[in-house]
Amino acid sequence: MLFLWYPKCTTCQRAKKFLDERGASYTERHIKEENPTLDELRSWQRASGLPLKKFFNTSGMLYRELGLKDKLPGMGEEEQLELLASDGMLVKRPILVGDGFVLTGFHQGEWEEKL
Image 1 (tube, rainbow, N blue to C red):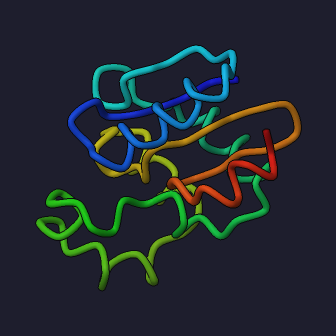
Image 2: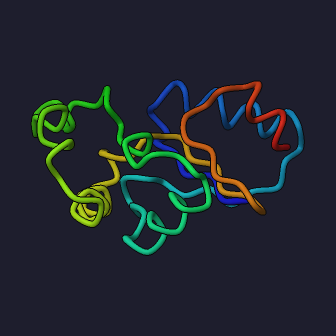
């Protein structure tokens, strides 16, 4: 599995602890230092079945600074994907990518179900 996280994020820390306590095998990736690529995001969004908005870190400072709450509805899917790929801090975290699933954010019940 691939675990994308931001180490200073407390939710990400809880998710990592959750994985470690269960002995899960994963590769971790710092979402800011190595943000997801356009192709990765496109693929993950399709695999997840989630609307693209679920991939945005709506509580992040950058999201608010850019006024994306008002801008996203008028943007096309490709434009949104390009924006997400431009800065890892815009991407919802943590993300867990496994065989046949992609999870955004840490919701323990959902993660337990997939593991």
